Length: 191
Figure 1 (cartoon, rainbow, N blue to C red):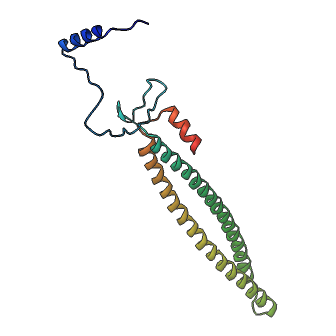
Figure 2 (cartoon, helix red, strand yellow):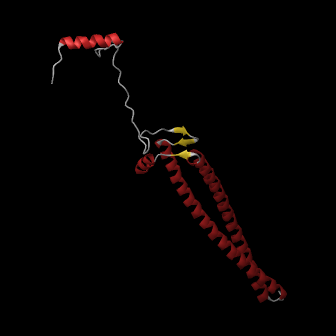
Figure 3 (tube, rainbow, N blue to C red):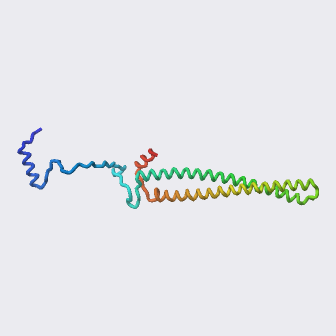
């Protein structure tokens, strides 16, 4: 390697000064302040990831994407609860239909008994037994109907809540939204 002479260095310095460039020694009178490290994020296409509104779409940040995935998990749980409740409602409805048929059958037997003479003690006791069965079945049916209606009300409330959540999800996470595939991969691993 060649060594530069002090004469060459001073010549170079004077040329730089003549052109208007000023060289500093790197010393400063101001106290050094630490520079916050900023994580550089890369996309698969351009290298840097940009979030926010772009070309009419909103690019979701990893934090927002995480929130959206949590909402989606919540929807799955709500949907399963709705399906379970719906199955219970169907079962309750089938039991109500069966009880209605039993009541109708007892009602027909009572009507047939009324054609017989109720003067005889045996016919009278049988008629009273049928009336008691009928009244008990009607009371049981009314109780089941109250439970059935409560289940329907709960189902309707849960459905409204679920639908409102889905609408909110669509607005916040789906409609006119974009994500970076690497963000999705990273969030999915954390999730």
